[in-house]
Amino acid sequence: MIKGLAITPPVLGRISIGRVVEKNGKRLPEKDDQFTITSQVQNRDGWVLHPLDEELRKGAANNKLRSIPINVLFNDPDLNLRADYSLFDKKNGRPLCVGDGDVCRRFTASGIETATCPSPDNCELAKGGCKPYARLNVSIGDSDELGSFVFRTTGFNSIRSLAARLAYYQAVSGNLLSCLPLELRLRGKSTTQSHRSAIYYVDITVREGLTLAAAISHARQTDEMRKAVGYDQSALDIAARNGFANGAFEESDDEIADVVDEFFTETKGDEKPLLAPTTKPSLLEKLNLKAGSQLDAAV
Image (tube, rainbow, N blue to C red; front, top):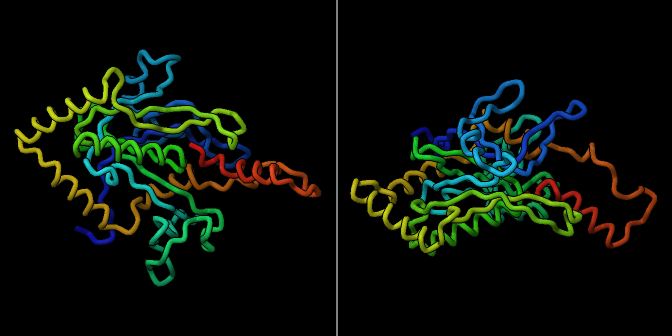
C-alpha cells in the first residue's frame, strides 16, 4: 500500500443540503431545505444529479427530498463518520492543520508535524479559519454494497446529532450498526442565534415505519445471513481503519478544491456590519454579532 495515501470508502456520489452559487463574481455556499444526491461529475451548471435523486423524490411532499433510506458500511461509528477540526489554505486548497482538540497534524515547510491541538477558539494559527469538518459515508440501495455516498458538513448540529445517533445505535444493537435499516433525515430548528429563522441539520433514525425493536430484529437476521455466506464485518472494519490511518489527510488533491469552495469560502467581506462603527456595542449586541458570524456553521 502506498504510504501517505488515505484509503477511503469508494464513493459513488455526493449528498448535500446546499450548493455553491455565484454572486457578484464570487462563488458562495447557499443552504437549502432538502437533500440533493449528485454524481461525481460536474458541468457548467454544477454537479450532475444522480439517478437515485429522481427515484427517491417520487412521492415526496412538494417533490422535496427530506429523507433517504441508508445503511452504513461499518460497525464502528468513527469509521462511518470522521470529524475533526480542519484549517485549509484558501489560496491553494492545501490542508494546513487537522486536529481533534488534543493532537493535530500540521503541514509545514519541513513536512507534516504533530502538535497539540488547542481547538479553534484558542489557536493562534487558526485565527477564525478553522472549523469542525465531518464526512459521513452511507450506502443507498443495494446495487453496490461496498460503494457509498458521502455527506460533508461543517455544521455543529449535524455533526453532534450524527455522532450521537451512530454511537447509540451501535450500543443498543449489540455492535450491529452496519446491519440496521437506517434513514438520513433532514430536521429544522430555530434558535436565538438564528434569530428565530429556521436552520436545517442532518439526523439519522431507523427507517420510517419501523420501531427500534423491529430494526434491531432485522439487524440480527441480516447479521446471521451474512455470517452464513462468510461475510466478515470485523475484517472490513479493520481494513477501513488501516486505510484511513495510511494517510495524514483524508481528501485527495482533486477533492480539496471543491471542499474549500463549498465550506471554507471567506464571506465576511460581503457581509454588512451589524453595528455602526461609531456605536459602542452593548452586551446583547456583542452576543448577536457573534451569533451572526456563526450562522454559516449552523447546519
